[in-house]
Picture 1: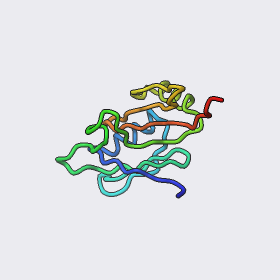
Picture 2: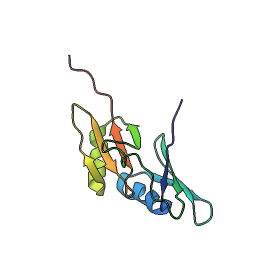
Picture 3: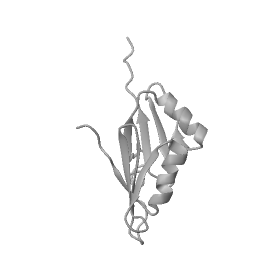
Picture 4: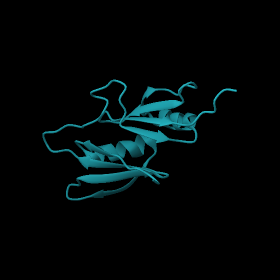
Length: 124
């Protein structure tokens, strides 16, 4: 496998795409369909697809059934760098980086949680 692109179902894919652009520094690749109904955002080799939920449905994310649930786990080379960028942009950070865990958690405007993490060397 070279990559994976999770698809999040959201009530407003334009607002979701703009959140990723404005708060997480992720570029919008495009909007598709009438209204539109689908969009794709990307940074480096990671993509997230955003699909419009049916009118009566809300966002469907994993953090609802489990407090510790995640919707995407993103491997990065420097979690501290991403954390600093997110903080500067005003992203909703739900957990700051910790050396023992080496993850930074952010939550988008529809409640989807993403973990940004990096491999840590084992102490010798």
